[in-house]
Image (cartoon, rainbow, N blue to C red; front, side, top):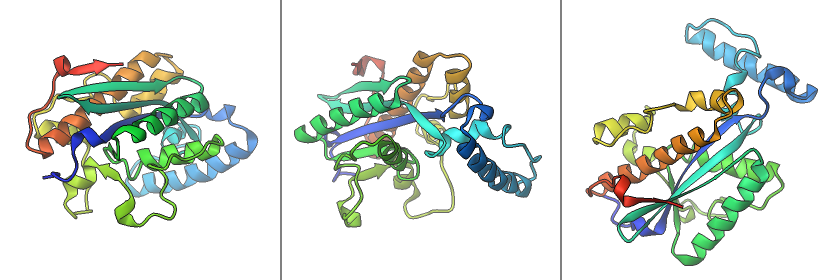
Length: 241
């Protein structure tokens, strides 16, 4: 499986996002009104799911998953070279600078041998989120991320969740579940995605978020290796740049 995708030509990535501000009340008046509308939609879904209806402030913790109300605080990347994995992360409070640094790296990687991107649920989340935040920050979309004018077969975006579906679009399969199925160490041994906003805004522990994001990248790479019928890598085979 995946013989047409040499792992050396793939840049693996994962992003971590948080709400743009620490509290609903800190939003600008226009965004506050628009979040109230968004919260109404979320509350309808919660009611349908049998959950208790919450106020806009109570559901603001979910704002990080929407590019219009959230921001990226970490992008971790992985490149496979000489049978080992190189991990590099871009992170911090200045999202625009983070994105600039990431796109500079992406351009250099493309000039060498990178021709594909790979993420878990990347087509639904990571790729579009990065593109939207680039535009919001007034930055140019790198060619490898840009979808405009491209035919479907010209888009070099891989997605380990989509690869696992084999055409079955009924269910979402988490990275944690696939890691367990394939005997790969879980990336969720400390925090989970739902904890990132708290760790960022309350605990102010960026290194913890970076470590979590890097673990996801390592897991995505190992999952891809297992899809190819190969052995997974371990910490001895990983270099953090």
